[in-house]
Image (cartoon, rainbow, N blue to C red; front, side):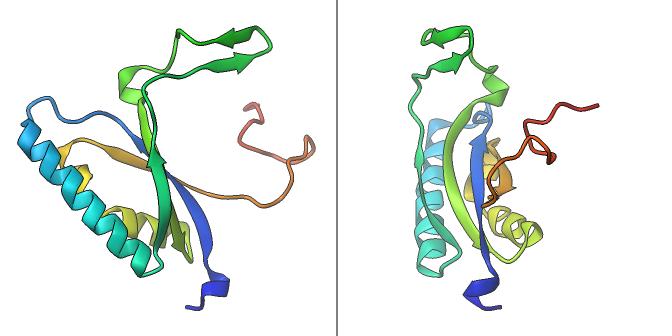
Amino acid sequence: MSTATKQDFLVISRGQWDKDASKEDIQHAIDDFYVWLHLCIEEGKMKMGSRLGIEGATVSRHGIVTDGPFGEAKEAIGGYWWIVAGSLAAAAMIMAENPCIKHGLFFEIRPTDAANASAFNVMTETPNE
């Protein structure tokens, strides 16, 4: 498949490490992740992303909140990366190889949408009817 037919998929790292996993096991998974990530980048399957800090803020019509409430721990977002693939299924197959899965993390994969948002089209922000 040519690069022209591939697209970017946002990968959102979610969850928490298994409570029964040792710090050594978790560190080994993290080390394996970075080896795997850099190999995927070299192969053109992924692009660099970033870990996210613990601090956060929310902004809404009600104002700015910097001390919570934020999502529950099970909804924690640890970071984001990019997959370059020809389909959502292909992106999921790449992410299924992530070494951190075996210790409790899971990953949300979303295709990017280059189109401008429109109130007349169904979007992720559109309320369910």
